[in-house]
Image 1 (cartoon, helix red, strand yellow):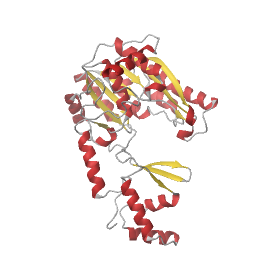
Image 2 (cartoon, one colour):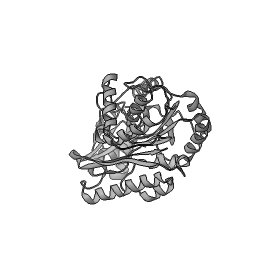
Image 3 (cartoon, one colour):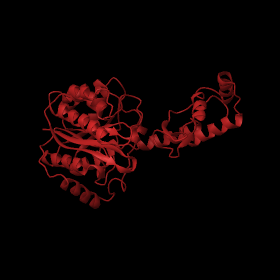
Image 4 (cartoon, one colour):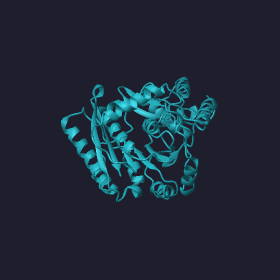
Length: 371
């Protein structure tokens, strides 16, 4: 392979005997398995030719790597979509252009039904799973966890939504599980659901973009497989069929987003939905197997976080998590939207720490409504 190599930043997962590398946006589905030595070679490739990589290895370790081995590695990287060749760039561009027109359903038939009639029955069943009372919501915190794992949390969200007069628009702020070019991003296209497309509110999105110090419509590929928007949109679109939507992702905290949203909400009022989960503990996340002490710690962090948010104290909620040892994934969204949550009193409607038995891991999810 000739010329200097250009690499994409992979998603890296440690596994027994080495590492699995994946395309962070899921365009290329086949992962690449590398040993620690292979990962070292990869770390030397960016901006170098294969011959220069051989020289670097020899200077650092006194080992001559066969050129064929490096060529095979480069080919495997290309097949995994991690080496920017003209073919890989063309495919990524093609996928990006598709997403600039519409965002198809990715989880239909897996996390929820694809047909409208079946989806309506699914929605009704989740509402029936919550037996408590719920207030109407101006702001709603709800999960993006797999619905079947926390039905009562989604049921509580539906109970609040049915008490809330149908809004003209819904701002849905999810957690970015894929890299963003900026702290936050939006995708101004229809998101397909079994209830029809969740159409974007373009004037509100444009107003928000104009107020931010960065380009809001960055990283379309980050939305391609993002469940933190697709799952809550299923419930929101099913409840409010005529609403328009402002789908946002937050990758890292940016106070500018909260300040800009406060201005935009005054001009384009609507429901604000924070689609976030709570603690992530167990072997899947680098901990020992799920146990009573780990469960108690996760619950303490989660419940304390939700209670402080319900008291209108987002900064105290974040401080309660400390260094976030249980990996509450709501932190960046809450920190970014702190100006909108400060002083706002809410009610915690549901909480569950759900066990994933095959991996002895668990994820927390809750529902919080601000009347």
